[in-house]
Length: 96
Image (cartoon, rainbow, N blue to C red; front, top):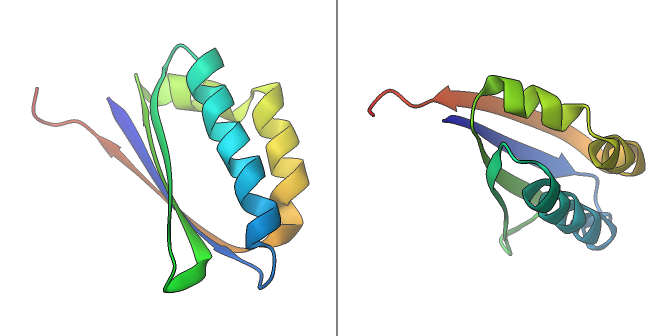
């Protein structure tokens, strides 16, 4: 198991445009990528410009493959100008 946690800070006023694109990217990842097992998108009304992602892949190779998919490239290009900051952390399962 390889988990990816992403915290995105969006530019003010872009959340409504960003979220449908993010939801589509997550759903497509789950549907089309064999190595993608979970892709949660979360927000908090108290922090409207922040989006939290929790993704689970079979392994690091599956995540690397996700970053090379056409749907991710389209999503990345469409949303790059909306993102003010991005923090990415990865985790590996240590207890079987």
